[in-house]
Image 1 (tube, one colour):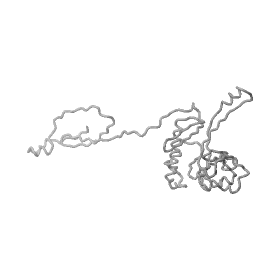
Image 2: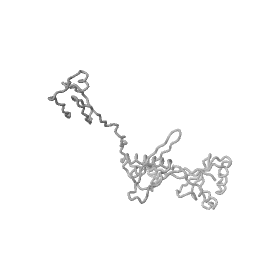
Image 3: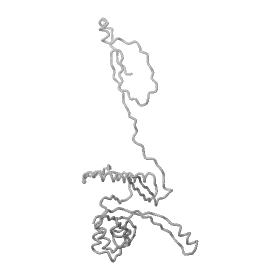
Image 4: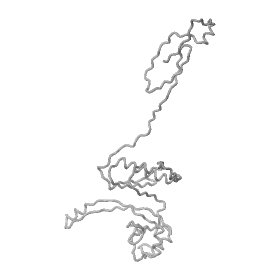
Length: 277
């Protein structure tokens, strides 16, 4: 029997109604606190599977059985499919409770075959979002447990989505409890928050990226007399003005002397001594 397990979101209203009559009781009944819970749903769409399941539980909808398009079984109790869960028949929307006396061994085998194989769920203690990122490496300093193979790409993507959502919640919410729902389709998405403390919401912008400032080092050639001095200048701030230094008297370079046919230098001549600028 084929089935498509999924989840259904159930809204529950919890209200307190005191002992009394008339307007007093009505006013108290109108005060209700709402919350939402998720419950697994197994969807049957195969004709043979629908017929067998309804026959085993002796469920007789008002519409002809051959007009039934699908059957959904909702795990209302949250402890696995079984007695006291709900069966919804479509397109009529008729709802039936599963009678515990009709849950035979065959029905139990059918329900046990329903698994949420493609779902992703993680249950754990509170921790920083960075702990759950797929690129976070847990280093073993002892070397006793070498790192295992990396997770498959789909698992890394799931952990990445979970870590991003958790990081956003931890950055903008300082409360102890919050519930979220995000459903995305081809045409749009739905996002809901409930069971949270309004006073604990504090918007905080995400941290910015790395600075785009790049430090560069320039090599400046300083020429003095007939010697070439190399020096390294570190530029630590932006140059806003340029000052031009007039050129002073300098001795001719060796190449220029040869072109001019200069005489040999006498004993009294001295070579220029390089100085650091």
